[in-house]
Image (cartoon, rainbow, N blue to C red):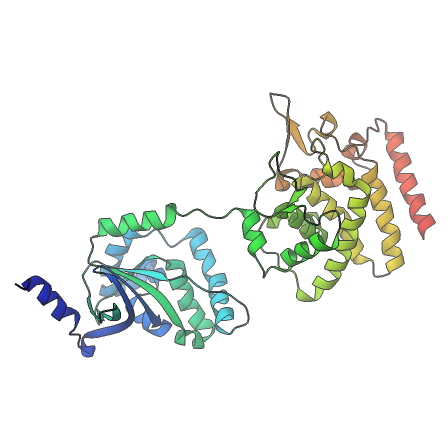
Length: 411
């Protein structure tokens, strides 16, 4: 005997009238999930710009948005803060990928309908799902991308013709959708900064960092690309995050620490000279203080200190004459060679502090890099004398005088 419910459902699945709504092609996963693709222009018809639902004037003027906001408030967060600030850059990314100016892809947008939707599929699950003309869906994941696609279409209308993958969930209540929002946003584990940087092939200073690892013998095969910080059993000398930090401050000066792991807006025309000079600088640095950088009891390879060392070499970018650059490099290297890199009280208040247990804790780059930079590079600062165990002002003055004399001799 044939199950009438099953027969009825099968007939419903196979009888869709194209005049009744939007047809989305794809694959039926089960009775509540369908993976499909739509052009962005069609996406805009079935999923409104989420930013509009938080625009009070537009909501008051639109019955459609008023109905949509009831659902969205239960299954989404406010479109504000970092989420809203990310839209312009995401939109530019979509435009660039669409024009094949850069590699990349966007993930599926997860769309939700509390009402069940009809589907027509073959025995392999391929076919169509239909969204009634009057119905609008809410993005429970990928909402920032949805807003960015609206923005991208304003920048370049051609992006409205692009196909967008959509994951349509339907026929479940709002409690289910709210739980899915939680699971999609909380259960996933974000990769750490080191792995993110190691995988990035687009950021120019990340590329410089990779080339330095290869070009500077000291770093070759000794840069950890998966950990945020080195463990006691790691054989590497630095993390890729720390080495990139030195490259950033070399290019931008000590103020470059503000970028952290974020992309740095360096003009393409600057990259060749930054690459050349940074490679030469770090080759000299590692030749001079390499043993200290290898010593686990030393601060020489700490991320904060590496950022400051990179900044010490920044002035070399302003010297067009190779002879002048070489002479100035030697003066700066002599300053680094005179430092006592061992962890100890002479670094307290400069690179970090001692914990109650007596261990020296190094501060973060944004907190202490300026003080470390001053101590490494400014003969007039108190820290300059302290980390070199020069206890008198006359000692410091002598170092400054020697530095000036060395500069004249090199010239």
